[in-house]
Amino acid sequence: MIIKTHKDIPSSEITDEKVFNERRTLIKAMLATAAGASIPTAWANNAKPNAWNVAKSDLSNAALTPTPIELVKNYTNYYEFTLNKEDSTKLAQNFIADPWSLEISGEVEKAGTYHLEDILQQQTLEERIYRFRCVEAWSMVVPWVGFSLANLLKLAKPLSTAHFVKFTTIQQPETMPNQRNKVMLEWPYVEGLRIDEAMHPLTMLAVGMYGDTLPKQNGAPLRLVVPWKYGFKSIKAIVKIELLKNPPLTTWNKSAPAEYGFYANVNPAVSHPRWSQNSERQLGSGFFTSRRQTELFNGYGEQVASLYQDMDLRHFF
Ligand code: MTE
Image 1 (cartoon, protein in one colour):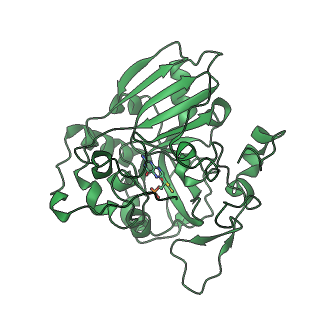
Image 2 (tube, rainbow, N blue to C red):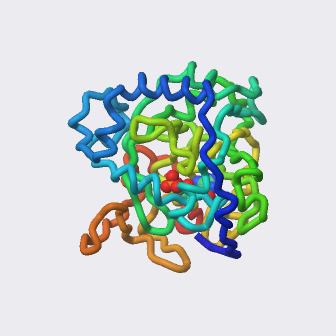
């Protein structure tokens, strides 16, 4: 991603991890029930998915082997903490992910602010193994735990005037050093989808991965996952979802409009201005392993191509 300024985080700002409180424990317990008690260790050992007796969603790519969890946890993009992919693991540990509320507002009949655990009690959590492709041309395979965003939006009863959905990350400058220092991007981090993209069953709100709660550096306690789009659309630590008449101005699009479009659909035929998107480096593959050929819509074309039928994908990149 484009980098405008750089400031290192002094180690004096890193303190001990805060103890999870009861609410997080409740969410964890729900995840254990939803995903199957035996998952975590075996996922961590990168066992084959079909070695598990776990109920999986029909939307899951069950044949894919998840990327080893240690790589997914320790190679993250979380600019509120750092511009460095390795350091957010440590820096994010002060982040307060609980208690957590989510505001749903805008063009809906039932606007409101809800505790995360109340939202989860109304949802059936599913495990979905998805491909994840970063705009920087690396990729991974992640077993997320969560539910279709559509299930939540339907409860808020979108009005016919709701054409777009805007997502906003929390502002927590006391734990997010780059929000304090106003480094790089404008905060809060904002993302957006068209309403039909948001209502697509593949579009997911994740609260966990590898059978456990989301690590803080991966977006705890609640993040978006849109598997056919570049990873920057998958906004972390969401506190607000607004349904809008008009498209929201999103963080990366505002920061570098020629480089990061609103749609950000994975497309090997449309290069980033500074690099090709034709292939990708798979996290965890050996140094001599060849790169993977990137697929249109990250391989989800059968499910989502119809959303973009009459659109010039070069123009709407
Ligand atoms: N969400 C917020 N709030 N802040 C971020 O910096 N980075 C994005 C996205 N969501 C980001 C974010 C980018 S660029 C990517 S590639 C993915 O998160 C990375 O997800 P991961 O760190 O779990 O791999």
